Image (cartoon, rainbow, N blue to C red):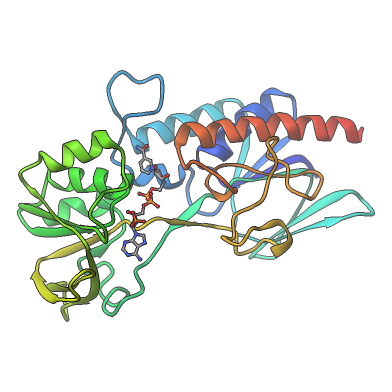
Amino acid sequence: MKELIIIGAGPAGLTAAIYGIRAGLDVLLIERYSPGGQVINTYEVENYPGFVEPVQGWELMSAMEGQVRRLGVEIINGDVKSIIKNTEENLFNVELTDNHIHKAKAIILACGATHNQLKIPGETELTGKGVSYCATCDGAFFKDKVTAVNGGGDTALEEALFLTKFASKVYLIHRREEFRGAKILQDRVLSNDKIEPIYNSVVKSINGSENVTSLTLKNVKTSEEKELKLDGLFIFIGYSPNTGFLPEEILNERSEVIVNKEMQTSVPGLFAAGDMREDSKRQIVMAAADGATAALEAYNYVNEMK
Ligand code: NAP
């Protein structure tokens, strides 16, 4: 039995682990894949304090993981299937998909979010054959090739800029006339010769048999359709919280975990932090702050049980 189990090792979970173990709690951190979360797929981070020059996503997260390991937190691999509170014991049972059960007095959910899909013809079939959700992972395969990015948020703008290191051309396809992403990124995108915005347009289908060869685009204002020849499409149209294994009672209509300002859910001892919680700003620094808040509150909760 542990005092605190943290589920997810992105910025929220790793920071919760740092604060939890330093408060004296016996902490177990469970991660589905490898530690780091979505930041691993980000080429450069420019807005996390403490770095004069942009830091690479993997480098930042590997430093956070190293810090957690140095402090002595136990990290295990596991895919959580369910979390049930045993009210008689006043303990949580965390069941993994391999049927292992871990018990804890308090839980911090820090499971992050997963990229959204367009759900259009060709997307599933051509994923890995020109369709990608990670420019950092796949950008180098598109040296001197023609690519497109779909989306208009911070991720789409940042990743379009990153792709210009390799691709000869990057179309930036957005469904509106104005990007959602930060002004500084918009300025950089619009002044980059390799990037050509295509506004008011959605991708209707991704075409090709062995590899991506073209997109069918639809102008949402004129309803006109056209074919755009290219070699790859990077899709960055937002994220959905990883909350599929949680009871509906603690989720809102967008499937985000409802918490108060102490990161406490409606179940005493169950906390949530970072991108999976309601009203998250989806920033690394804020996920880290959530993790710290949740761990300090979990410490108070565990102490009050004694
Ligand atoms: P986002 O801000 O939710 O933007 C998603 C973009 O995709 C929007 O432009 C949206 O269009 C478009 N979109 C959504 N569904 C679509 C669909 N079905 N078809 C076509 N386009 C679609 O997502 P994000 O860019 O991944 O960012 C997520 C969060 O992380 C944000 O809060 C962002 O600020 C943060 N973030 C921050 C940084 C940073 O600070 N460096 C980096 C990356 C992300 P509309 O604009 O028309 O809705």
